[in-house]
Amino acid sequence: MIALGTAIYAFGFVNFNMANQLAEGGISGFTLIGHALFNINPAYSQLLLNLPLFFLGSKIFGKKEMIYTIHGTICMSLAIWVFQKINFNIDISHDMLIAALLAGIFAGIGVGIVFRFGGTTGGADIIGRYVEQKRGIAIGQSLFILDILVLTLSLSYIDVQHMMYTVIASFVFSQVVAVVQNGGYTVRGMLIISEHHEAISAKIMSEVKRGATYLKAEGVYSAQDKKVIYVVLSPSQVLIVKNLLAEIDPDAFISIINVHEVIGSGFTYE
Image (cartoon, rainbow, N blue to C red; front, top):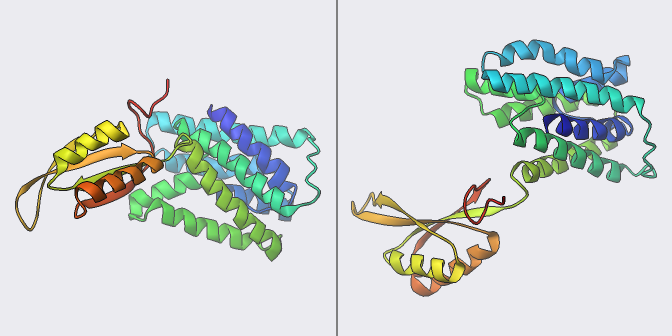
């Protein structure tokens, strides 16, 4: 599955990014700069730039994760090389918006599959994890800074118009990665604090057909023991529960959180 994910990414990278002068963030962005300015094949530079990062990754990754990272990086370089040898002649009538959307979709699906099965494509992921561990800077911040640096350098071979299409592709990529990695569904977690917890939990089980869990808590101000209801719901069920709470206890305290993945009865499919 990691090999399949890198192949999907590489297909979009070659046929949409390289073919339409769309930049990219991270190490892939550096390979595109090298290709545009010095005619260095990204299939080779992708692997060469990652070699020193493997040493860095060995200090923070476990053995299994490191093997998956090396495997994903090699598959990525090989797939980029293969797709450069095959001419698919994809006609998008020089529409840069369609090219940007397709670039983001293919990259998102490919990387999402790789992440979902425990792999990485090396590069910026290794740098971000290392900086987070050694410097305490959140991985999202370091990757954002790296992407800004690479995209700024990319202006050496593309114009502002192509850069804006690259931003569109990056946005689509981030959204598709989340959908693929999280299994394609969205769920919400709801924490409910109320004196009428028994009536509320009974209604949730009977009318929404969802199980609920009591979490033992203590009020900081009152110093009294409380039962907090925790329930996982689909977005449409959240509205139903909110209406139930408005009837049973309008003063109930509710906290709704995004849940990336749920494994268990009612959410996991065989």
